[in-house]
Length: 327
Image 1: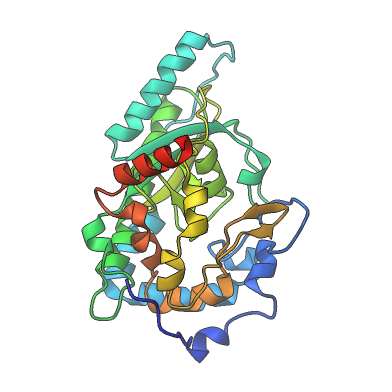
Image 2: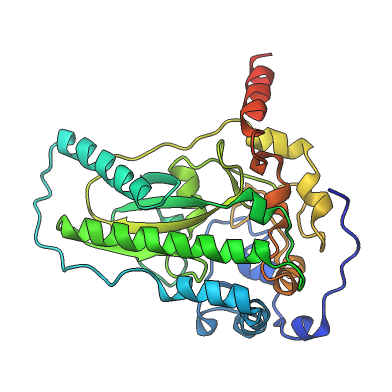
């Protein structure tokens, strides 16, 4: 892909920005840990950029095909299942193992492409929210590369934006079914679909349960799906076995790769890691990203440009990384 040309954001979007930078809200350059603040995808009244969200959603939802598909995601999936009955906390390790396999199989049978489990940690919860459950089940749903490869969307071709909305919708259905399934087993469960955020910060949870590593473009890179997938989660007290993080060399590769940097129209992808709320990590400049995100109905160019997202490439990259590590 060719290097992006200089992007000039429209005045309508720029004028909707508050005085406080989105990067400040996100904790850029903060040396101490804190929970992430509710931000762009949260209810307007709970965040610093609520007016900007309204303008951006007018752009995205104003495109008929994109808006129609996104409405399915906003409405969610099946109705809430039955109230759970009291359960004993004394469950054998064998039963936990069996149930864990059953939960993963259920998610995959109900249209998930990835599923992982971990225990809830403080950094999974946005500031001002609380989640009382002990476990979190994260699912991933893959994009169609053929639909995504035209990103970023334009007025003439919105197929990539429709595909993003379609997969958010699929993720919402998966976690709604999974929520009801767990409740039928007698345990409390709550689903959290995207993109409109609630209590759960999904990315750190997905990293801890083995979905992959954080890439330079701010999205997770999975060893099989690359970056081309979306997340949704269910929280529960159903005792489950937990998964481990999966590190396979993405971090080192991103240090030397500039593909997503070069194709990003607003130049929002930073070349080096930044300190964000006490953690050194890859970071995308929100203030630069969101205007183009709005005009392109969700962008996605960095996701599809990532070498890991191209069909048939992941196995070769894994082989090269393994050889590099062995040398």
